[in-house]
Length: 198
Image (cartoon, rainbow, N blue to C red; front, side, top):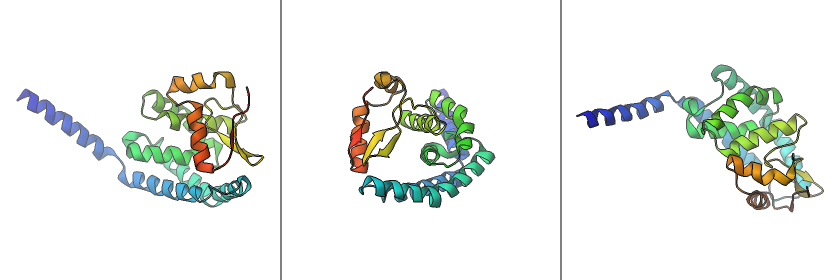
């Protein structure tokens, strides 16, 4: 009976955790992510200039209204952690957060995102994307090599701190080698991908 009682408590704990997830908010974030990713997928495969123009249009038509909505969500719920929106909802939020047009929103979320990563509630790529984007947008060098930019018809690694030790920093937080990142960028953008010499 003790074993059965323990199993019942564990199961009730799982059901209770699921019951706390705000499914309406999770579904809204997933819908926003779909709009975001569908629009961006239409930009790829063209010349660098055409892709850049496409991204600028998306920033105006999609990212700006999405930013306003994410600001409202954070004001009402705080950082949408797994306990609030589940794994899928949090992943969608982190993808949307990469594209916000307000740096003040990212600034508010530096500590909660860092804590979520330290608690292993956030994957290394989501964390690196957030930290690198925030640093680049505030005039600093990125740390993990997740940021890229269109330059001279190519996809070029954004300015990165201490390039010689980039691989070690990536490995330390659980990211794959840059060779995998380069391969992925080539597949997505169909452009030459360049990492400047240290």
